[in-house]
Length: 130
Ligand SMILES: [Zn+2]
Image (cartoon, rainbow, N blue to C red; front, side, top):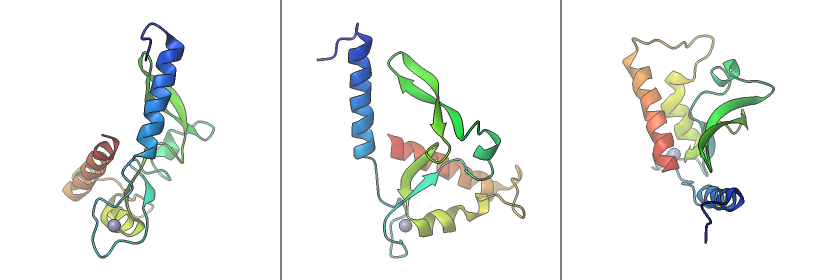
């Protein structure tokens, strides 16, 4: 039983819930069809190479994380930050290529396709997390 007046008890309960969520996370492609490549990949809901790079501090980014007192900022390794296992490699690359920003592909706030894909990726991450 959780003692809600005891931080250690709350932290253990939160750690148990977190471990359960990680173990039971969705691990199949949300676009599941015959084009799927085997397995799922850890997709970044925020692009790692170009966008997270702007926020990295010694290999980590600060993210809002649940805690026993609500939420708090914690350092998360950039390769784990914002990742989820919701797409196979083929679909992650093919669907989200227009928002895989690089030297020849930049964010354009007037580009409705990019805005839609950024929205889709955010919704997919939240769906995965729920
Ligand atoms: Zn797929």
